[in-house]
Image (cartoon, rainbow, N blue to C red):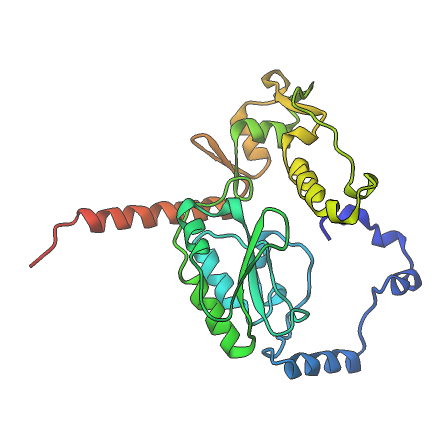
Length: 282
């Protein structure tokens, strides 16, 4: 679920929730589900696991065993240690495979090359959500866990990703402080939903590709948000502090969690530089 506001659960009765498929499983159903998972070759489900559709990176890292199946945890921990944020991981519905999904633009140039060069027997590479890339292996259990970790270990340390971990100062003022004016977008182009076009079936995939590319671009927006510094109600540093964020240079980090990861990256780069500059001893 991408937007919690789509469902107001506090206004729905228990009977209505059950009709929607939302209900507490019985002890017998829980046991049967766990037995079925093992029969499919997966590692046993840990007691903390709860399937969630969306959850902030910071929360997931605090308790990975609550949100991620056992096969994917070591690989995710490896990626997180390198400031590679995960968008999603596979679950027990993905029979015979386990994988991790990341936002492509969140990868450094070096790590995009690493992803492109992932090849080998049983390796899966595909795109599931727009703007994301997936990598994984066509096996589960201990073997799948180990092979997925081997893939994650090939990635390199990088800085935290923009938008997921920090924003520019103008974007902070626009997105979090409403310091903007709506202005007409001169590049706006109107496009209809693929199935509103009455196209022949064979033409729909090509149009759909163009349509979803349009959705991701500024061409789909009738108006744009233009920063207006006159709408600032406080000095910039106070606004940043009020939002629990941290400002450094031209970046505003969305929380101390993301800022600490950035500092870790800086320390790693500094240590590597010192090693390279240190004269070798014979």
